[in-house]
Length: 337
Ligand code: FAD
Ligand code: EPU
Image 1: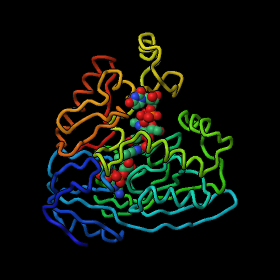
Image 2: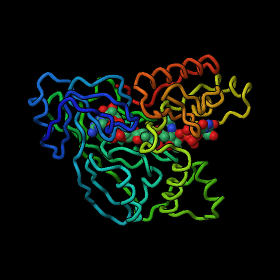
Image 3: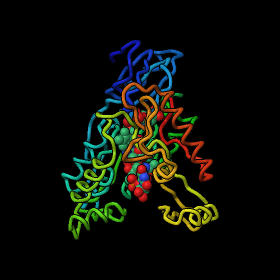
Image 4: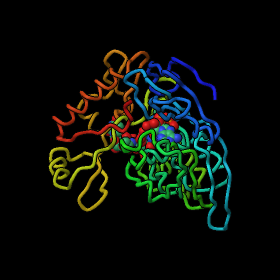
């Protein structure tokens, strides 16, 4: 286990925030997790995948542990399904590509989401009509508080919209997820109901989209509107899409009849935060090197040398303004560290 000291994390977070860690290491074998606490007695620990959902405000006074545990294995095959074990340090998009090459359905809608496979359950990654919870059987984690290994079933992960048990404050940096188990369907029917996908297939005259068609569509759509962190620092959607009650929804639509929305239950509606932020006039806004992306108002960006504080301050202003204008309090999706 190589350990680096007093090292910049700039290239280890997609926002490109230039903070330092007291120590940085990576694990490539599960066993290494067992000796972490002995090696760094009393130090704070931070788990890090590809840093694509974090915003660093300060230097990290402790040990940052990157996940480099690799390996992909099919563990069971029937006519109806295949079960795959994916090590947590695999790059998520590589897993999606592999599944599509094998004509397995289940995660094709989750193409091009940055990050490690082991982090995917943390916020129950989702896009274009699918979430990891739809295919995840279980995940395996090492509990740093007692040195025990634990398997979490899908139910035990307590998945919600961009949420799971692993995101709760008391569990952060407690369970290190080193493997996930997925159930994928050979030649299964892909999920094509998401509006943007339907539009794409209509425009491209694709009547019966295959698994590969869905994958290609998601890749195309994402490339057309989401900024590439290799070109401009960002962490995807900065805020979650808020869920409002029927009463609040009716009040809002009476004032904004064109407001896009998704009904999620009899009494609850999800409103796209990107729309709210654009309506409030923030799209394309820039203050120093911190800004709101010009194509996707839900994505805050670092044009180069913004600090974590600069981005955070901007997010505070947006939260206040959306609250004043719409009576909705936005919540951050990104993990502030
Ligand atoms: P990190 O940012 O490194 O970590 C995220 C959190 O998980 C941190 O709190 C960290 O401490 C914790 N963590 C890291 N590794 C482990 C582990 N092994 N065990 C337990 N906890 C751990 N997300 C979506 O859901 N849908 C999208 O469509 C989407 N699009 C995106 C587009 C862009 C351009 C970007 C930059 C991000 C996008 N995201 C999206 C967010 C992000 O890609 C996901 O949240 C991803 O799962 C984060 O993975 P990571 O390895 O980079 O996690
Ligand atoms: N919109 C605007 N202005 C904007 C951006 C969006 O009006 O600047 C409107 C769009 O016109 C559309 C609606 O908002 O009517 C939804 O937009 P989009 O389909 O782009 O999706 P989103 O709600 O902005 C969510 C997820 C993304 C995920 C996409 C596709 C959240 C917080 N974000 O974005 O996830 O990729 O749907 O499923 O749920 C992420 O979590 O990091 C992320 C990128």
